[in-house]
Amino acid sequence: MHGAGTKSFDIAWVREQFPSLSLQYRRHGSAFLDGPAGTQVPKQVMDAVEYYFLGANANTYGAFLTSQRTNEMIVSARAAMADFFNCDPNEVVFGQNMTTITFALARAIGRELQPGDEIVVTTLDHDANVAPWRALEEKGVVIRQVDIHETDCTLDLDDLKGKITAKTKLIAVGYASNMVGTINPVAEITKLAHAAGALAFVDAVHFAPHGLIDVKAIDCDFLVCSPYKFFGPHMGTLYGKREQLEKFKPYKVRPATNTSPECWETGTQVQELIAGIGAAVDYIAALGRHCDPRVKSRREALAAAYRATHEYETGLLARLISGLETIPGMRIFGITDRKRFDERCSTLSFRLGDHHPTKIATFLGERGIFTWDGNFYALNLSERLGVEQHGGVVRVGLVHYNTAEEVDRLLAALHQFVAN
Ligand SMILES: Cc1ncc(COP(=O)(O)O)c(C=O)c1O
Image 1: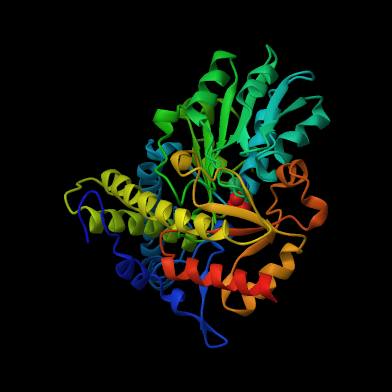
Image 2 (image 1 turned 90 degrees about the vertical axis):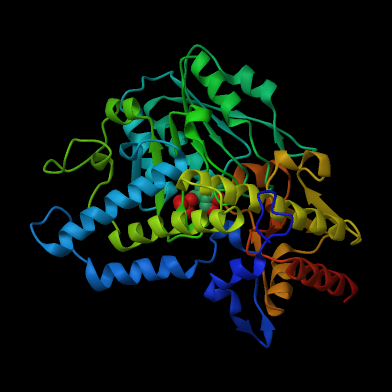
């Protein structure tokens, strides 16, 4: 394999890194098509967590070995996430998960807002990028919600422009939809926000396993993502432009530092998992080096990894869509045009006739094929598409450790489901 263009992707090498992929269920292999709700974890992440417990387990800033190791580990994980985001390490904040981070940040930003100030959210977003902003309605903040084009589940940018006013203080937008895979033009939206004197907050949780994030190129003020969606442990991370992290004041205990980014990390962090975050970034970089041994820096290695996985995932997605389109009663949500695959990632939702999504997911689950059903907290979208009251959709998530055989197994099982 190898080669910059990754003509063939070394899927065998990838799968060797993920021990849980060999899980057997009722004499079936397990097909993990549930990645959008949390991906599997490579061995090096597990090793990093174990190593932390074995040799570095202590709280921070003590005058002894394990505490010093903890400090060093956090510095190193922050540097890894800085490469991941393309920012400075002191612009990286660790937290419990994206939802908790966003509620805390929204509350801190809300301190500075006046009744009548406006925030723009979207119909395409996970509720974790809606509810924390809506919570500010209690203070008199006005929330404006941008609609979608129903035919391809893309954001209606004209509607977005119309929703921005002189009172807009922040635009909260997703990088990619966790239900239908649409990728939003976040750099363009950030420009619109800044032109109106507003902040841009990007939820990159769903995009992170599929594409290289570059906060400098986007120029957003804040961006969040959750390592458990990109092969790491269950935590959340925030990028905040330094001047913004310093401008806003987090709610915190008095003895804790006022220096950013640490002042945003309230209470004792899940240090063992921060060790795992650094290892997750290093796994992606190792994949990049495996795909293109010529890369030098970790950032270049991350870029090489995402180039390779994007091409591979796009191939799987095309195979999935071609197969689904042959199944009677199939309704796929979002972009299906192969020429527009750069506008979406490899997460796909469908409905099949009038069948309840839970029934389909259960049928697949019994055959060792793990998919999600429901709304995945993309509540606005589920309601807008008229599926909320019917159990939502079935979601298939393809990430770089999935295979063409798994896609074929899924398609064969769906044909069997329809025939039953
Ligand atoms: C797009 C998106 N945003 C936000 C979240 C919430 O993330 P967390 O579980 O880290 O709070 C999710 C989780 O599924 C998501 O998919």
